Length: 84
Image (cartoon, helix red, strand yellow):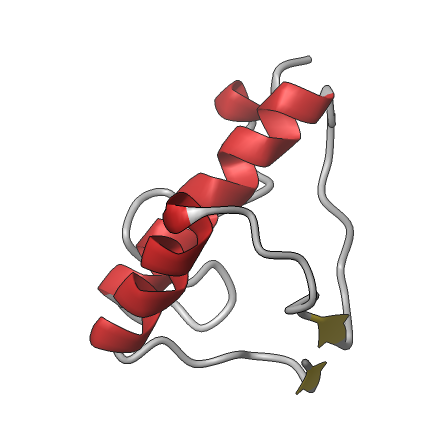
């Protein structure tokens, strides 16, 4: 199955699936990136996480830098304990 068609894996209706709270523009952006990476890598599902690590060692060009800047501009926040 294609991750792009799996609405149950991410909330694409503008609401957080559990709390039914409107999601922010930063969350929408992050969801689109996760969805696209999943599709490219052939993922069929997402798994629940309790923590995350952001790999800040590798510079992947202007696109990666712009993505991070845009999340900051949109006041993006992490939802699980996260290391850098």
